[in-house]
Image (cartoon, rainbow, N blue to C red; front, side, top):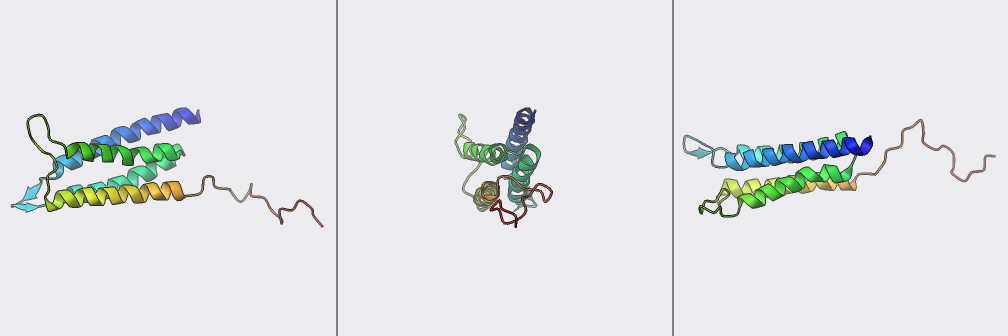
Length: 137
């Protein structure tokens, strides 16, 4: 049952991360009165941090927790490539480069926290007590 739950959470995490990354890429040229509005940068940072954390908490699997960051990176890199029509989604503007840098740093930070955290948590009720030597005196 646990592996089925992890697979379901993994699928949901991949779908949500892909959708969010795609929306963020399309929000990059957003301007209000000719002034760029960096909504994508904020969404990339918050989304990468929250999705990785939520995937870990819901699935309990580190592999599943890393998936949203990987999917975000794949979509962002794909957005830098030229489409068959010659269009570019991510160009060399300041907001675009900030989006890429902040998104990658947030994803790397979140993945680092997930991979650097202790594997299992021991509850106080099941924690061993004593010196650990096995001999009570």
